[in-house]
Image (cartoon, rainbow, N blue to C red; front, top):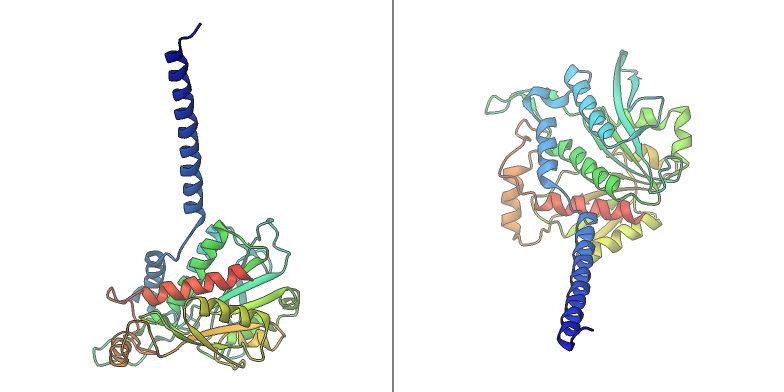
Length: 328
């Protein structure tokens, strides 16, 4: 027969054991939630954008070997994520343009499965363009390589950041990722793909296409224009709601031919093209102007990677893109 003291000790040990198991369960639950939770990886975004905007790629100019290298880099990144071809059996989708009918160039197109593992479901799409201006007139510093860091290497990197998060936490719709070529020549890559006879099978399932090609503000933008959100559609209203949850405002505008999403809007696909506004959190107007002068060098050789570039605006832009994709 156990003594009262022995029973008390056993009971105490049992209670401690149960408490320990409960604590382990809570720790495991918190850890699982921490793993499931993800945020924009600005280190990876900056690194990929730096690669695409490096001098070795010589501005990713049209119809150049370096342009083709950039396409292969992005196709490799998508392949690592498990993206599946949409046209033919490769992520590199060839096309020719009437300007250079003897020269084949490439878009990069792949689809990531939804949470059920299907790629034949409805789709949400993200796009950015990887071409830039190549080598041109030197600036005052004798730099003739138009690197295109903000236009649009960082947009490509943000799209891949969302794609990585989608692989970890897929939605009910598959994610279509398209990196277009020859945007700088007049949306030629996007137009070529949207006009393919077999593109209709994709556009019919595409519930939203978001274009990422408006640079990345050096601060958290509080005002945004949502090109393509007028006339009103459900995805535009949802994007506006998500923006307001961050304390931002949006203004809807109709589609116009300034982004690769435009040809798809003409095929009836709802589009969004977010454009950051002039008000940034924590910046006065003079501070914002100074940041623009320092970092925003549109279509200049000085649009290149800069270690001092603040990535806070990139973080918020990429987070909003993820929320839009995940909510659709």
